[in-house]
Image (cartoon, rainbow, N blue to C red; front, side, top):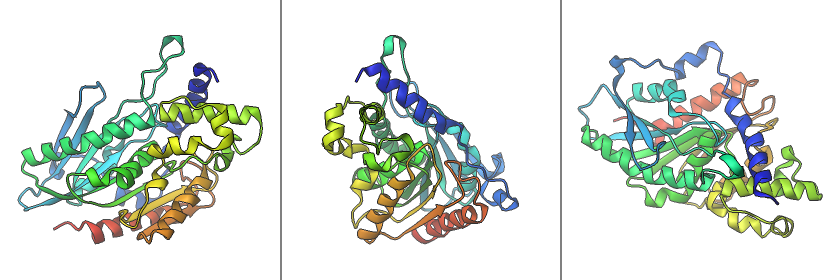
Length: 321
C-alpha cells in the first residue's frame, strides 16, 4: 500500500476526533469545570521536558502548599493524535487543582503530513514514549516548587485517553511513583480488525485490508503489509500501543466511558478492554453510553455517574491528605 494512502486514511479518520469535544452542558457540569484563577494556586506554563517543539507541559499547583505530600493527576488532551493542545483542558485541570491535587497537562508531538507524502515521524507509539519520558520531568518540576509527589493518576480524553491507558498499563512499572488509578473516555485500546467495523475493516475485501493497513501503519509508525493484516500477524506488532493487551492483575483501578454509536474509534474494542479488566480482577467501572457517539453527548445522567465515579476513585485510591 502506498505510504501516502495510509497517511491520508489516518488523517481523514482520526482528524474527526479533534472536532468531538465532550458535550457537558447540564447544570451539574459546573461541579467538574472550574475557571482558573490565582486563588486556586500557581500555574506554571510551557515547562520543557524534551528537545521537541511540542515537548512542554503545564503544572497546576494548589494553593495549600504546606502538606508533606501530594497526589499528581496528569490529564492528556484529545485531538485524534493529529491536533489539540493542553490549553484545551484548563477547566478539568483547574478542577483537579482545586480539589488539592498537583495537576499537569502535557503536549506531545502531533502526527502531521509533510510535502511529498512523508510525515514528521510522529505516531501513537512515539507519542506514548514522549508521555513516558515526560512524567519524571513533571515530578521534578513539582518537587522544585516544594510539592512532594507520592502517587499519581493518569487520564485523558479520546487520543489522550489512549495514551493515558498505555502509560497506566504498559509503563507504570517505570513510573517514579505508583500509578494509583487511571480514568478517561473513548480512547482506542486495541486493534483487532474485526472490531473496527466503523471503518469497514471487518469486511473480507481488498479495500478493507488496505484501509486497515493504512490506519494501523500510521498509528504504529511502521508500514504493515496487506498480507500481515489478512493473516493477523500485524497484531503482535501493534502490541506496544494496544493498552488492553498490557492489562495484568497489577493494573491500576480504572474508570472509563464509551459511546455505543462512536464513529471515530471502535466501540467493540472497548468491550475487549472491559473483558481484560474483568479477567484480571482489576477494580474498575465501565460506563456504556447507549445514545452517544464519540462526544458522549446524549447520555447526561450516565455522564454524571461517570464523573462521580472518577471522583469516588480519586478519593479512594489517591485521597487528598
